[in-house]
Length: 218
Length: 226
Image (tube, rainbow over the protein chains, first blue to last red):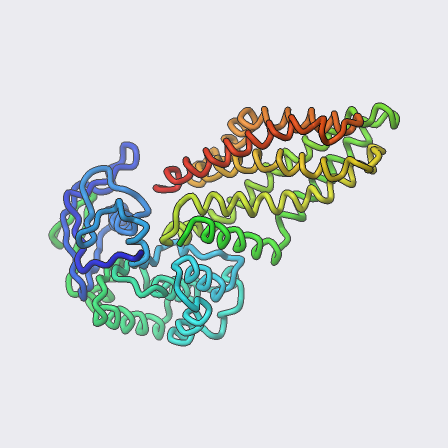
């Protein structure tokens, strides 16, 4: 059963990989209908934060709450989380359509094929839809990855460098898409290096350094 | 989504990929055929003593081919970090392990369907009364082996030393099943009836249940965090 929530909070969140401290105690809250952009230098802990929020890794210390639910309800919560990762996480041997249909079936979406086709139309993926993903450019694969994250109408949409590889037109569509998700009440969290893009789409921009949220000047 | 349905989706995805490229079946199948062919040429002496050699050649071929096949099957998940597409889905973690085990077993058994008659021909073994029990033995032996190797491949998805780990840990663990399979095959080739090798089959079934059960239980935790 899919669980719903309207607020995500992280409390004293820390994550270590062996001796490396990737997150050093982060406290944050995210509300429905808001867009948060996170910026920072390489290795500052931005992507680790997204991975923890996507429940692909578990914190060393601290807690994440999705509304009233904790990560122990991960199976129900995963059905409400969409994630566009930097590595696109698509099967190169399958076409964009097959990747989306597989994801839709795993999400138990009724009429998976129709849902995938509808998204293809909405995101105008038509030209390369039935070709294997390994023949796609970075931008084309990125658009399929974004489509997959939206398949199940997630409450929490996590995007790691979503504008990478997109042409001007696709980048403009991405801005519209983020705005639409915000209007629909999603919690959108975007990790990006592009300051202009962050200012354009986000209600607030956070900066990270050495695993902590810092003031922009720092 | 229930575990079996999710596992079936994972297995069908693997088989769909394989049917398109035929990469795994071609490379591992050719390797297995080569091992049986070389074995029959190198160890063949006469029709009377060749059934003593055939079980060893057959099981060595299945073992090496299986290790290659399972390694390749899991490497598909590492390409583009595609496995995270599965880990992000609201499905039980064990279903990924079960699905990968089903698809690897289906591919290995397809190769074995070619290997078994080839082995009988090359070693001049009378097929009457042997083929069906042998296929059952091969299936039971492969199930234990594949379920164990898949489990260690799941562990190795983020480990650099995955190939070393597969070889070093899997072979000793599956040794009881392989020994039982090889001995039962030897008995069968020596003219034992189905009722005479049923004891070996029971041992193999017990081993399979133990390792599949252990794999399902452990994979929930192994794949929880990557």
